Structure formats: structure tokens, C-alpha cells
Amino acid sequence: QVQLKESGPGLVKPSLTLSLTCTVSGFSLSSYGVIWVRQPPGKGLEWMGVIWGNGNTNYNSALKSRLSISRDTSKSQVFLKMNNLQTEDTAMYFCSTFDYWGQGVMVTVSS
Amino acid sequence: DVVLTQTPSTLSATIGQSVSISCRSSQSLLDSAGNTYLYWYLQRPGQSPQLLIYLVSNLGSGVPNRFSGSGSGTDFTLKISGVEAEDLGVYYCMQATHAPLTFGSGTKLEIK
Image (cartoon, each protein chain N blue to C red):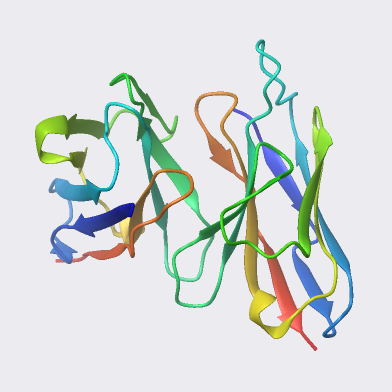
């Protein structure tokens, strides 16, 4: 069955770069898009970006200058990198295929 | 960017009551191929979002048929016909017709 699992550091210092991995199973990344969504504590969902089945990407306008999404189809992994992290980037980060979601990974930005 | 406006922001319902949530888009979500990429999600407390409805009115896998979606163009509605206790949480609409994709601000459903 389709599964997604996010992984990455739970704590990142301000100004540094966040690197997250979404490992998927049950489908091919070449056939389906994967989106990244984040949710600050107590707030709503924020769409961050997508890598489509053809490898094209789109990004949230407000995050575009700091965000990069890539993938390794042979390893069934999607990567998120966001630089110059600030405290307001503290959030739960999810990856999803639109219908299936990972459990999320909590990232705290603090010195 | 497309702005999705959800109303109401909070909804209080009794068990068995029928409720509706509105999602209005700042521009039409109908694409040139005739598809409308409008989704509805429910996020229960402490859980990841789950898909309820895709392409405006199609029920997600395993989703009870008390949930239904309707609408076109810029106006969309999620209806719950007979609220159950497990339906509490926050409901979000999301559009994927126009890049960047965007979410509505959410509607919190409380059970009286």
C-alpha cells in the first residue's frame, strides 16, 4: 500500500538550512506528484511546494527564494531543502501525494 | 496567487445535524482541459490531514458517503449529512488548478 514517511532533524539553529527527506513506497515518483505542507503550532496548513511526476517543481511564492525540492526516483525519496531558517519556520512538516499523507516531522528552529 | 476563502471559520453542530462549509476562490478553478482541481481535507486533532473529496465531488477511498462536495468555477461546498462524533476537527479546501497551490484557512467543526 501507499506510504510516506518524513525524516529529518528535530532542531535547527536560526540562519541554517533545513533538510528533510520523504521516503515513499507503493507507487513510483515518476508517476505521481509529491507536495510538502507545513503547519506551525496551532495554525493552519501552508502549502510549500510540489515536485510533479515529470520532475517539474512549483513553489509557494513567499518561500520560493529559500526553498528547493528534488527527488531520487531510484531510492523513492523526495527532498526538501530550505535555507536561512527563522523561528517562524518552526512547524510540523508533511509530505503527501494529495491523497496519502505522512505522519509529519516536527521541526523547531531555536538557538 | 489564488486565495481560497472558507466560511465559517468555526462551526458547532449536534450529532445528526447536517452542516455545510463554503470555499470561495479568487479566480476560477476550471482549467483549460475542463478539470477543476479542488480538494477537501479533514485534520483530526493530533493527526495528519486525510483526503475527503477530490476534483470537487469525488469521494476519497474509505470516506463515508455522508460527506459530499459540490460547486463549480469559484464557489464550492462541502456538506456533511448527519454529523458524527468522529467528524470533529478542522476542514480545509485546497486548489491545485493554478500554481502555486493554495489552502483555505480552515473551518473548525466542534460537536455540541
